[in-house]
Image (cartoon, rainbow, N blue to C red; front, side, top):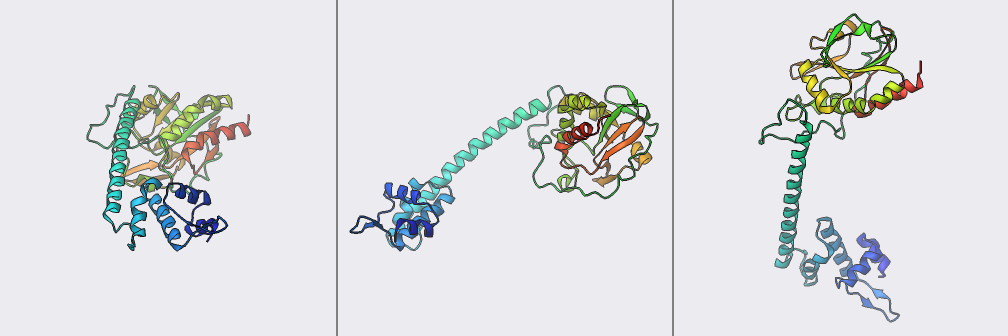
Length: 318
């Protein structure tokens, strides 16, 4: 058969076949006209090279396996030399894993140091699992559905509720001013070294409070330029906990603490329960002159939400 037929049957390119020949792994016959002539044995050898490559064994190290087949064995790894080839590949892979593990440990140490810089909370003990990265969004998170739990909010007056802020002052929600104020309501923010509630990532819309806050931080000046008079985060977490988050993430705005879910009771905000906690579902209120002008609900993905609010402000100028 010709080289193109061999390549097709073995699932490789003709260029790869020529490379195998240059290494002496394939030795086809030559026809009278000078063309290479391949047979079924060459197909088997080429397939074996491809299979070993998928296991991470380089082409240059496949010779013992091919020689085992050429010697008449049924399997390419029936020979001692082939087993030695496996061991060499395993040893090399082990060394790479150890090197990557050491690099990962170093990166985690840098992450902990950076995450706790300026924080009153000490890094976790050395024996704890450190690799809980709350600043990124895991893949394949469940997407929250619109259950209609916030449909009644637009046009509703904000209650005369006073909440404690991380800036050391109380904030009265019905006295925020005649301009627009953005209040993003979230379940809870994670903290390095502290576990999230069990099954957190399986709850639609739960994961992502830190990336969401970082988004509002990064877009803060843009939001103000687009017409927002102020930005607040709000959760049921205590003020001291939120103050640590503000310092660690360098947030340029205050967080509001509502541990009694007072705003939720006044406005009928949606909540969910997990691990014995009652937490707010993620939503964002645009408040204008004491009235809820617009609501974002549900919110997904949280790390892109600040940009969504910015787009809305720009599309709806005062």
